[in-house]
Length: 274
Length: 331
View 1 (tube, helix red, strand yellow):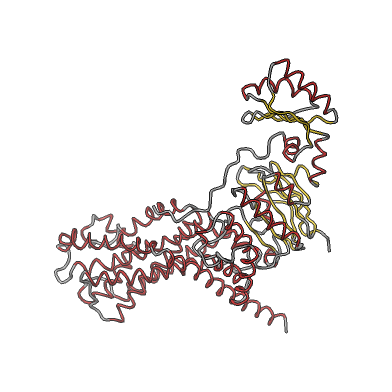
View 2 (tube, chains in turn yellow, purple):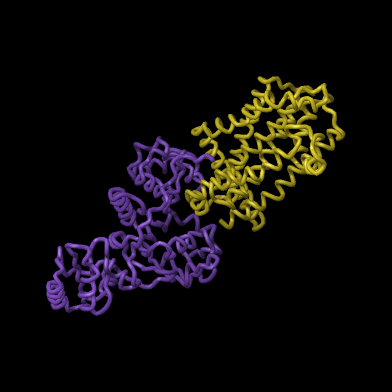
């Protein structure tokens, strides 16, 4: 075997190990979700309460600010679903902080396994939870009257997009978990960081009621863009927007890639130093 | 090839302003056990983290089974096992799943990982608990599971970082039995501990580490002769007399001694004049009207050694480590 061929095989087996090690840890993290269903149950109850609060308490008032063609529940659910995906993603930071505290990260680092596997396994398993959570929220959405108005293919794309948003946020959460190293600190910090993204956006109310400065932030806020895209994909022509679907999809994708480009290397670097 | 499984030369490490290691030198021959003995914060864990490739040293170098811990970290990881202070297991997995997971990460196939896990669980008395989640395990069982996980890859060198800290006496004795068995199999072990008794029982050689450097090395007997001769140990009937009694007897020895206000115990090295000093001590305490509960000349223990070497006791403020968290906290 020539040296080049040998190196190629080595690289191939490295990639193979990276995938199999990542999968071993993904499975391990998924088992935790299955064994501790309360983790998912509690993170489902909160968004359900948000749905009830917004639909039945604030809904009547907010609906007045919407074009009459749009039922508030159809406007709201895209925001709730994206919000739920983002909050579920914080579990990545919590899980990593726990593994650090318990010495599991030390164990993994002393093993001859792929360096990437801990982060890959964590973010993938939590994305599994995000998919589950998103589907569950859709069921809730249907129960309170939400409907797809633009056909199933677009609806499927919207759902996939919401899960992708959650995946992007798992990497932000990973940085927080590795940096702060404490479950409580990660939870507190996540809320503080996520708040201006989720609430200072058009996720729950139309942005045209905002003061000028807030509208400016909301219009560049990636959560607004993701939620708008979701709405156009589920409401179709009912939703009046100045942006075309193509432009929204491009901007959504750009933000998704931007998140990964920034937070994947940051968390990998942080992981190597812990 | 050298007959040393572990060689460390002049390891230094600094965390911000704290100099954790100030030049640690160590050698461990194949098939032997080195006890790295020192109080909390002496640099034991930092040394282990460097030797197991978790942390790069700022200065100095180290080799384990011929691999440089920085340059050859990857191949080295196939040769070592690490069992830590905090029982690094996943409590949501069963004992079996924990070890199979580690086996898979050593790139054993599923069947082989399972076989290996069965062997190890059997060996460490966990076969019956194999299918229970580790959450239900006692502290001692967790440590044994952790140790089992560290042996999956059949390591040549095993690092045990305070393997019994925080265990109850029974768990500690069980753990000692398990470790002694490994030793008889010929595994090279570097064991850190703050318990002198543990080093005395398990280690062939003891390196005493304090404040980031190794201050003495030798067999337990060699270290004990460092104290020189015997130790006079006396215990007062009434602890309130301790300061006065200490004033009366400490000056009798060639230098120093230890006073424990809590137990009313005073110990001092007496060299070879044991009998004369004992007689004089009894006379003085009698004159001062201080009643004794107990007085004896004895061979020095490792405690005495540690005290003589460092000027402070080893098991200072025995702080229990945080127990492996039960359940997940939710904010």
